[in-house]
Image 1 (cartoon, helix red, strand yellow):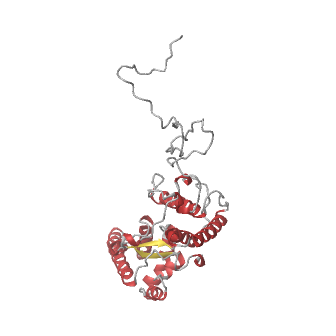
Image 2 (spheres, helix red, strand yellow; image 1 turned 180 degrees about the vertical axis):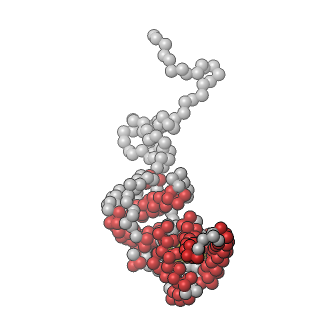
Image 3 (cartoon, one colour; image 1 turned 90 degrees about the horizontal axis):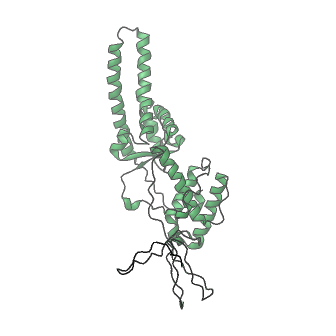
Length: 331
């Protein structure tokens, strides 16, 4: 999908971490792991002094694997890419598309890290980071991850406009498991820069991305939804699923205010509250606006418009007039 994202349209929003900051974070993590390993090993040796040498060797190997290999994997999985060293240096491990990592990503990074960091004293990791354009070591390449800087100015972050409110929950049943991370990144970058593109170029790119996304999900894109709005709605659905998976089913995703109806280039009817202009018709019939709409009378109307029940309010009774009860006495 890289050919769909031109230099004028997008810029990589993820800021890869530099090698010095990554090396410092790794050293801090190793120091904490070694301290924990020495403390636990001392306690285990004291507690198992009566065992033979073979049993003590087996316990030492098990503790080494558990603390120096399993520990970092568990920490990165539970903290979503923030170990103690990375948290101190303002770094985080994310997927290639910017999403939070899962257990399989942390597992691959941890297992390969044993070879390129522990067994080679970090030489292989340093060489791989210098060769990579984004400073990734071998564990990041095989796991599909990237170490990025979290402490960046807020103004540098691209804003993804939310979908129209009338599309909320419409794509909750889509299967998004077959959509690759590269396509998600291309969609996000397009949405952040679509207002800066020529309208025809933006529409063409949105159609191509929507076609590719529909092919991956197995469901055709709806014809009554503009392509950009379809992309934004599906991207928001994916972000909501990621938030529920990371923070629990009760997590709510806060969305910014909805954009203007023309933000996605579509003419689909908007939500309740859009001004309503009645069509020209019989001048003797008073027009009635739909419920919840702001009524705008047509020019030259010779009668008083009739507001809907949701808008029309009953007049307050005068002091000399009893309040209306809705009861009509018999003749």
